[in-house]
Image (cartoon, rainbow, N blue to C red; front, side):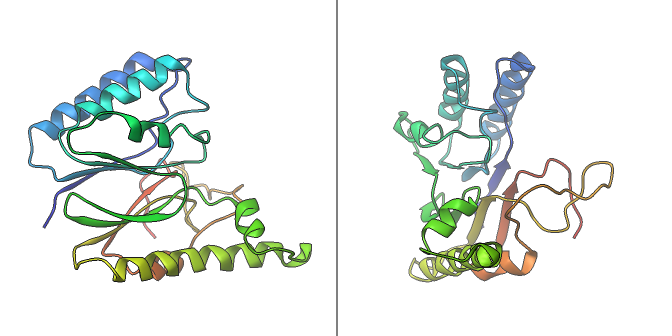
Length: 211
């Protein structure tokens, strides 16, 4: 079985503990290099906001130091284009990015990528939807995206299947046990199962969870 390392919510930010963030990611790269790792996946929020040149340089240096393929998806803090920019970097094993849902194969794994779901984008894909039905329609459209990812995975050679996503998962709590609220799009475990994957690498929720 391929060995996959999951990283999320790096939040590279010059204004907040930047040196510590860079040092921690250097430690991760060293740790990965000392082990037989087939794939590193990063499930969103590489940056805290639209990136600065220093933040992009630090994130790029970390990604290029990883000794295996990398998959990145966009998080809710990542500005449009900041994640896709990273696929332009030279990397011996390849940096794969997803700012929109897609399926790819890397490191001996079939990967379904689901970036942070945007309600407005989902509704735009549906055309005219009555306002009172917008929430329900967007949720069903998101479930259709997951079904579509599962269908695309079915077309690939048989390999382990992994869903990499930055998303709010229904029922999540903070490190103090308080319910996480405030997202207009969220997924339940039954929704995630629509992609029919063997495992899930989820970003956005910073505390370990037990559903």
